[in-house]
Length: 597
Image 1 (cartoon, rainbow, N blue to C red):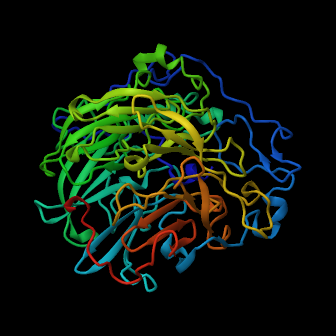
Image 2 (image 1 turned 45 degrees about the horizontal axis):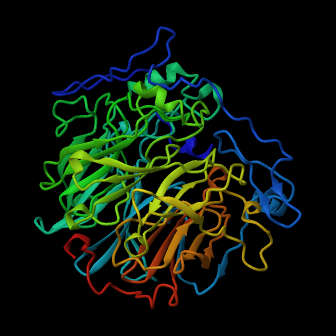
Image 3 (image 1 turned 45 degrees about the vertical axis):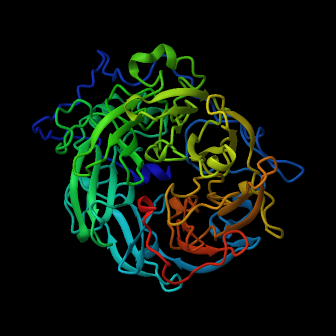
């Protein structure tokens, strides 16, 4: 239950609402039996059973057979020949580290000071006065590193709410701390150079936490059986939307707030909304914005955008488009969702085979994936919608986004489906790469393929293959990564904007207990793994409940030919002269100015 431990929110004691100009109370209707009408119920309870112990596990040929279907859950599961048998002295996690192929570890920074959060972090790069800074953060926890000299990284700021003590289950972000005002934190951010302001501009997402308090994966605690927990969560005081800052330096004191925008569609004045009982999800994950006119975010603007089977989450996000011509006055110009996402669209929702499984994430987790910005002539966007599959949108007019194609993806329940789309190869090959990611440990769920999607005709995308399933290096103590302990499968392929241009034919992916996998897609018909770097899977500094969440992110500096690897035990800098080119371990030749190119 590792994410549940991380993301507890208040679920007892209704909080007072901050009623300000334009503020609206949630308005979520409640049924006479006390249940919330926005919790999907059209398909009843179809929660899958746990697979029988003899139906999955190691095979005679050394491969692993994954379960076909599993319910939501993040507990550990034993199987004969698994990690608990192979690594009993290290709590069932492999302490080894492995490198295969033309990979060099340039630097390693391990320990709590380089781990603001054990489970997940976001990253950005900014350049000030000839020095390069790396941001790593997850809400209240954050670090700013000077990475100008890759082998002598320095921490220049550390942010937390460690000085605030609350009882288990209460939301610490309601409280002011030494680093944060009440309701404030460091949301998932895009940072782009503004030629007009001659400064970096940061857009931060503020969203409802995704696993909360008394809402849990167990049947009795899920949103489907816990009306009281749902009601209290609806009444939670928070801010949902996004904030825009001008950055005049790398530290938090250098941020200047330009605008505060709620995504709650019930607000008359969304530009100046104070914290309250906001409807909907807020802005999810990292907004898509490259510094030009248009920004796209994932959001559920009302509580009625709610058709999702995720037992701990209340919203089914679609997309919003904003005019960012003036970063101090963002203006919503468009909105889109797929039919079946709203509570009023139960008939369409019921057609999805996941309906009623009380397991699947349904809706967006990330903003639109866009190969070329609209301002540069781009027309298409790819929408990863979890259990709703993959949609292709025409966004040439952001005020009127239209679905021009849809692709259902093979079911892979539990875990997360259709989360990430890598579009870095699209302009050259017409291929995009779509994946979900694992939530469970010890491979107690279907494997999450990285699907190769031929979208040369964007009106007729089709699955044409999948990237190879990673295999352990020669001489490893295990025959399959499912035996190593922890989650196994793809997370994401890095940030959608980063310094320099992505290499053609190379896709690095964070792969949890399989570290970083470097896929060679030069010939899309024959993708292969060119190299892998797998950090240690065990550290005494990592608490037991977080040991399974190993390599969960990467960030590529294409200009300096470096890959930063983020784990539950620290940060690594990795290079490959053959795959990336000769690395630069000192300051960059030019500052990162994506929008000024």
